[in-house]
Image (tube, rainbow, N blue to C red; front, side, top):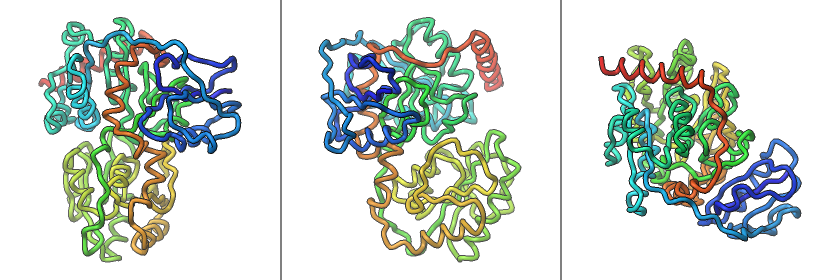
Length: 432
């Protein structure tokens, strides 16, 4: 099977006479050799030939012998884009989408941008936009139908309300786009994250290898991380961030079993720490010291203060790595991870019990090297780090999607009806 890397809209459907494993969109702003090799090595089937569009920058001598360049003979001109809408259902997704909105407003004055937030005091989507100086309005179906954007951009495509919008978008001829929010479970085939929207914008080469059902994906990096800069350690004594995020009914009965060995070890080692409780973690932590209730802004401040992060499945791990904070994924409860972290034991370690956690902490405390080189290999393959500015990449890409055909999973009418009921239920409940 062939693996095709492209940039221009005219190459989005090209084939070379053999079955295509996947088409991967890449930007032209950086050398993409490492990305091509990472995707190739992670392919779930044997690849016969790698094709790459000649406008891409790659080192041909480092690619397999079968690699071959191609030229798009007839360029495809996308239909003009008048209006792009962004829908957020949480403060986290608002932080994801805001850099793209601001970049479009800066670079494309002819395109109207609309930011819509879902009203729910517990998810703070409006506040997330406001903290990024983006003006948003409450989402309504009237606004959706009245404005009828050319493109609708979201931060997830698997919740019922998101799938309702995708289904309506297909009915109205609206392209739907999902930007990968961070580390998410890409293995669960029932929920099928990043498979429903017409187009999937992934944060790195690792994610591309986890959605082989997608015939076409776009590697763009993650806008949430683009302003994060490496920080040299500033604390005279190591300071640890313990991220407590047992939410949405998942493993909530394991909260204390997870926290207790972490806190016992930190106190035994006489290490300073803070427990950051996720805004949607409803557990009673009154029996613990140094507990801080967080939101998207507060957790970022705590990460900046810390030297190391201990967490279960969370985007906090990646945010910390961008800032130069070593991290440990602690998983004594044996949760299914669903994302190929690629733990390297240096930037990011993995522990399943108290003894392994102690070993990981000792490696961190004894590490002599703490510069950017420790984190670069991991971040490049997982988050497209150093390969362009994600918001600029996405802002330039979105209008081109009008000339491409999406390949999102079909959404049944039954699913749409369920989505409608859930959407209206939450809309009414939040207004009580």
